[in-house]
Each structure stands twice: as C-alpha cells, then as structure tokens.
Length: 370
Image (cartoon, rainbow, N blue to C red):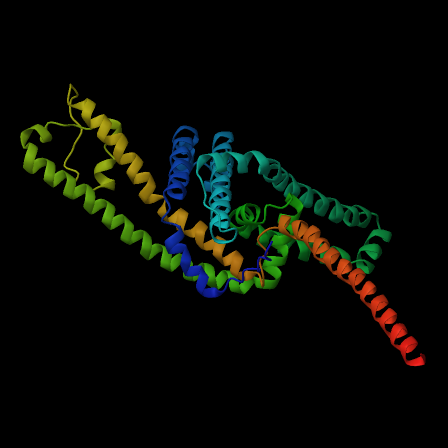
C-alpha cells in the first residue's frame, strides 16, 4: 500500500469555499436548517421580544426577552445550526481531505449517529468547565469572608483568583468561536468532545489573529457572492412570471397566493401574484408558494453554506499539516513487517554460497599438494 502524503492547506485554499459551497446537498442541509429555525422562531418567540418599554432602564429589552419560550427557541435554533455546520464540514472533509465522494443523506445519518455523543458531551464539557471555574473562585472568596484572616489570605493568594479570572475571560472569547469552529472541528477532526474543546483553546491561542482576519475577508467575499446569487434567483423568478403572463395571459393573473404567503412578494419582487379572496386559483398559488419557499430557502441559506465552507478551509489552513486518516497508519505497520521478512530470507540464502566457495578452495589446495 502506498503511503498517503499529508495535505497542507494554505491561505489561498480559503477561496475554494466559493466552489465547495455550490453543492446541492450542502445547500439543502442549510435550507432545511433555515426552514426549521424559521418555524421555531415563528411559533416560540413571544411578543415581548419586540416590546422594549415593559421593563424600565437600559436592560429593559434584555429582561423582557428572558422568557422560557424565547430561551427555548434560541437553544433549539443554535443546536440545529450547529448540527448543520457539523454535517457540511464533514462532507467537505470527505471531499478535499479523504478524496472520497460524499454520497448524500445516508452519510449524514451515519455521521450524526456516530458523533451525536461527541456533540452532547461537547455541550456538557463547556458546562463542566464553567462549574469548575465558579467553584475555584468560590473557594477563595468564601475564605476571604473571614474577618481579618480572610482579607490577609486573599491578599497573599490574589494572583491565583486573578489567574482564574484571566482564564474566564479567555474562555468567554473562545465561546465566540465555539458556535462556528466547534462544529467545524467536530466535523473535520471527528475527535472526542474534550479534544474539540482543547483544540478551540489552541486555535485561539496560536492562530487567533489569523482566524479573525480570514473570517473578515471571507465575510466580505461571502456577502458579495450572496448578493450575486440573490440577484440571479430574483431575476429568474421575475423572468418566469413575465413568460407566464406573456403566454398564459389572464389565466396566470387569476392565480392568487394564500394570505399567509404574502411575504413572497417582498422576497421576490416582480412575482406578480397577490393574495385574493380564495377559490380554486388559490390551490395553484399554494403549490407555487411552496416551491418558492423551497427555492428561497436554498438561496437565502447560501451565505450560511458559504461561511461554513470558509470556516472549514480556515481551520484546515490554520493547521501546519492535516493527516487524512489515522487508520492508514495502523494498516501500514503490517506491510512494513512483511517487507522486512523477504530481506531475512535473502540473508539465509547467502550462507550456502559461502560454504560452496570454501569447498572449492579446499579442492584446489588438495590438487596443488598432489
């Protein structure tokens, strides 16, 4: 078996995100995540989210937002987007690192089934980290409550709680990277939860500025790419409506959208369909609305797909070397042993030749004596 060289990713590879984001299964994963997130937001977000004057003060909007339904909606949406990024990063790894074809939803199902524990323990790992930090700080502060002795204790040990506080600040910064690069690390590396958390700390410590700069550049390129895709998609809808009106005439103008799909006229200017009183022509309007929602979800999720692809390549390029498979290292060992065995046999074959040479020399010496 030939040795597979480790792939080295460079800064220029980040711009491959434009190409790798144009994969139907990745766009479909993003679209489904966007649709489910939109439904959760619609049914769970409560009206106080939009009211700022319920609680007086600067924190009024935040306090009014802290309801059970709103928090549940944020948690569910975050989990769905995290899982979508894991799947997209995994499919990119299969394509560019392992050089294997991603075969679709079966692979997604296998990946989630195999690594869902890593995802769950990834969340639990962060909770445990903050609990341990809180207990560490609490230990020093509780003793510090003792009169006279406590203040002296805290002054002598001040650098220890300060170091813990520095670690808290670093952890909060890393949490900003967690949503994006945590999903990418699990999808690409496929390691345990704790390995993924440790990788985030190393990533921010070693390549923090590089990631921020690359992320900023990728966001600008992604916004331009998204605007291009959006214009193409809206123009296609407008041209379809123009062609239908030109050929179908009045029959097309009778098609009406259901009232709860009126937002499609805002999303797709030039659709030339409006909500009506109902009737038979609402049925084709309903079917067209579903198609446009599906198309719109794929189009509007392109920026999410692009940024996930960009984050995957940013992570790959931030590593000096990325080894495709650990299994190959295990498979190479038996082959090395096999290669050593023939050499041993050759050494054994050389011994009889030496014996034959000795016999010939002895015969010549005997002839000379005679």
